[in-house]
Image (cartoon, one colour):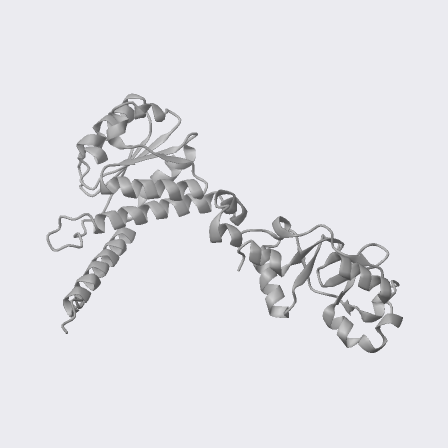
Amino acid sequence: MTSSRTEVGPGHLSVGRRVLRREAEALSMLEAALGESFVQAIELILQAKGRVVVSGMGKSGHIARKIVATFASTGTPAQFVHPAEASHGDLGMVTPADILLVLSNSGETPELADIVAHSRRFSIPLIGVAGREGSTLLREADVAILLPAAPEACEQGIVPTTSTTMTLALGDAMAIALMEHRAFSPEQFRVFHPGGKLGARLLHVRNLMHDDAPLVTPETPMTEALLTMTRAGYGMVGVTDAEGRLQGVITDGDLRRHMAQLMSLTAAEVMTRNPRSTSASDLAVEALALMNDKKITCLIVTDEENRPIGVLHIHDCLRAGVA
């Protein structure tokens, strides 16, 4: 029986490789062309008291939305305005405190005319990104970023591919330059990404720990230490000195090692001294890595003076998606 499945021939593979090669070459050209206008654009955005309003039509509009998302999640307030809607009232979203970033491969997109005119009328700073030198957009812009003349990926040169890849990469470069200038921290990043795997990996121990760490003193008889350990349900109990500092920890492994005479001993005689601990400011993913490395299921959370303030269980990390 003849299969109806279409086989992927070597021609398809060569086309795919050609597309990726052309786009990679275009990005190299963009890197080499990046210069003073890029620096001016970053400085202009840093001076803005409002948002970065990004606009573009068609494929440039899709790229604009992605740039807005990247800006917003890395500490630069941003908003997308559709150029066609701008002409029907949405120009009211753009204020003199804002800055405009307008994308157009040709630099002559008719739908952008009202946005450009609005920026000139109200002295709103305008950054133009286009692939045609001397185009209307670049002439009118306060900062003009000219994309290199790289061929599109298709042989006919009509499908926006290479040009959109360069614009997308340029947006990423701007976002990261702004992010690093502002020293945008992982903690700030987590604030904007509270959900999903990324948010989970940026959780801190303080977000997951319990504040009822089971504790006993070194002189506590093991009969009492076992009750404290059982009631807590963490499979361990911490041992603290008279100043409340962590001295040791008793785990199930310690109980097995002293089983023969366990009930006649004190906590100090059974505990493992200088146990591993974590701080509330540590990333939960780091605490989880420590637990996996040491093959333990709990970590006592201590403050700067090594006083227990909580306990983190491996199950808390797994439930939160930290891995």
